[in-house]
Amino acid sequence: MSRESVQIPDDRDFSNFRTDCNSQEGWSQTFNKSGITVWIQILEEERALHKIKCRMECKDIAAEDLYDVLHDVEYRKKWDTNVIETFDIGKLTVNADIGYYAWKCPKPLKNRDVITLRSWLPMGLDYIIMNYSVKHAKYPPRKDMVRAVSIQTGYLIENKGAKSCVLTYLAQVDPKGSLPKWVVNKSSQFLAPKAMKKMYKACLKYPEWKRKHSPQHKPWLYPEQSTLPSITLSELSIQHADSLENIDESSISEAKEERDGSDEDSVN
Image (cartoon, rainbow, N blue to C red; front, top):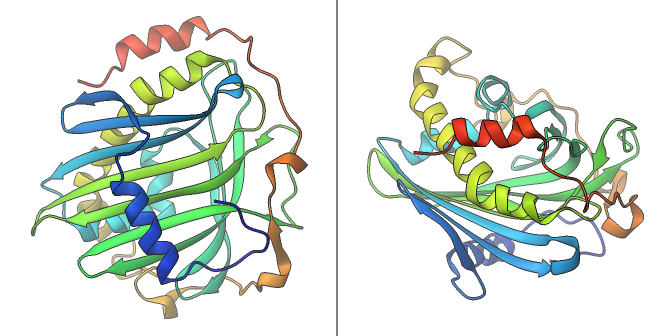
């Protein structure tokens, strides 16, 4: 998905994202176990650039609880062990904001971060949250991180009953640079399933956690609760991948402790 200017997604964008989530064309399945399925689509073989799609059946979890977990920045800091730093920067509308997210990459790769425009929409009993990268003058690339580019990333939550839903995660991220092939294999066969399973466990614990941590505070549902400063579109510009430094990590081997950890933490 290419953009020339920063725009807030409209109903057509959300509908197209749902269609992409449910499309089977061009995807290769890499993992299917314990209610979690992962597919990848290779876009540039030489750079290991790819799209990834994960789907998880969430029994015993209400769609609205999963939606809250994906929104709740404070709770994410509790359960997302890949996060280095995450915070909201400002709001654009009642259902769109700008945020920062930095995450750990498999050793010895450099860690990545992004600035994204995130938007969300309840669609009947289902929900969509999606984002893409933007530039903000106050948050330039950091020296200790590689600034990645989210071309299109998001979640589709489909309600399957009072305590059941299906989550689809779809991501096309340019990590900037040339990655070794083992990263794609590790992402699709180990890291993505592990992240989905971790999210599932976090959802089970969320209602109890939220009861003790500002239970009525949900600005994604009640925009009048938001204390974020307002941001205008004129303060933002598209983050084009070709304007960022390329990092060649294609010849890097996986760290031994990462390989050992993969065996210990494999998704059952």
